[in-house]
Structure formats: C-alpha cells, structure tokens
Length: 245
Image 1 (tube, rainbow, N blue to C red):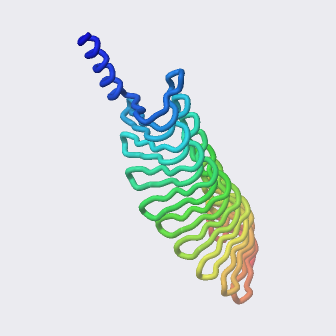
Image 2: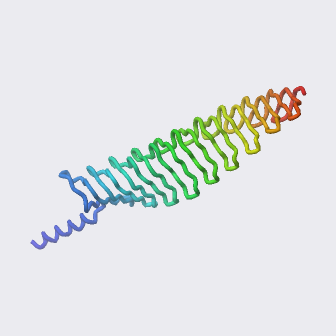
Image 3: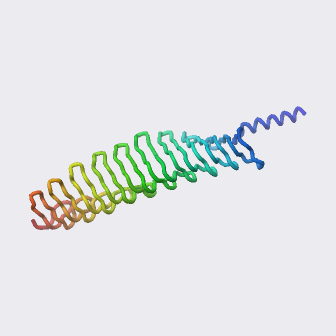
C-alpha cells in the first residue's frame, strides 16, 4: 500500500515538471490542453497563454531563447490577428499577423529612429507604405516583395525630392527630380539615374532637352544658355560632341 502511494506521488511530481506544463488549463476529455496554460518547448522557447486542442489559440506570449518576444493573438498554433513582436536589438513590429507572418497593416521601428508604417504581405512590405530612415529621408509610395516598386515620392534630408516610378528600390520610368537650388529634371529614369529622354532646367533659365545615359547627357539634345544661345547636336558622356551653335 505504501509503495503504491509513493508511485502515485512520484508520477504527480513528474507531471508537474514535465515539458508541457498546463497547471491552470482546462483538460479536454481526449487529454489535449484547452484554456490557460504554460508550455516550455524543446528549443527553450516558452509560451504562456490560451490553448485550444493542444495548440496556441487566443491571447498569449511566446518568448524565444534569442530574446525575441511575441505578445498577442494566436490561432491554430500560429501568430494571427493583433500582436507585438520585439527583438533584443530594439526592433519592434506592432499590429496585424496572419499564419505567423506580418500581414496587413503594421508598424516596424528601429532604435536608430527609422520606421516603416504601411501594408505587409507574407512578412514583407507590400502595397502602400511610408518609410522614414535614420538620416531623415522619407519615402511614401508603393512596395512589392519588400522593396520600392510602383509610384512613390522620395524626399531627401537635404530637401531634394523625386516623384515618379520605382523598380527594385530605385527610380525607374517617368519621374521628376527637384533640388533645393531650384534645378529640375523631368523625364525617364533607369536604376536611379536619368536614362532616355528628359529635360533639365535651372532657375537662371538654362535648359537641356534631349537624351541621357547613366545620369549624363548622351546622344541628341538641345542646350539653351541663360543669354539665349543654343547648341543643337550630339553629346557624349556629358560633353558636346558634334553639333551647331
């Protein structure tokens, strides 16, 4: 009789300190945790919150060995709904999740002051968003697969601005660049530089209308000076090559 009681006591102690701990949970008839509980996983991460059919479901907090932490809603064992994810580096994401990924509207911030506020899909920036860098530059526009793609506006710390198309993170297609000194370029861009046809004007009245390559005048173009003098002809790597004054 004493041996039997000791066996029962030992089994109860082992259950209390087992890997899957649910001291406050409601146990379903099939033995799966339901309700409030705590689970420590083999990788060292820990979950404290609600369970349903042995899965994280409802409100809960998961702490990872690396120091990362998620606090928010869960569904079917994955982060779903509203939640906050923090990293040891100080990075932080707040708002919507779906199937374990950032999905929907959310804000990602870093300790250096940089911030992204906007749409996410499958863990990446997608759709409309606003990104502010640590140096004060700001982008407002479209994203695809985590990079700037589509129409957007980039404002630099210096005050310069680009409005137009983006592809793979760089100005591409039709766009307009303006500088604080009043200079302005309107035309085609490729990989961040004027490429194709474009017009460059200055406050003093000087103007260039023509072809560009890799950010410099190249090909046929017309240049007009402030006094009205005009050059028409070819340019090569930014210099007059063959034309008439």
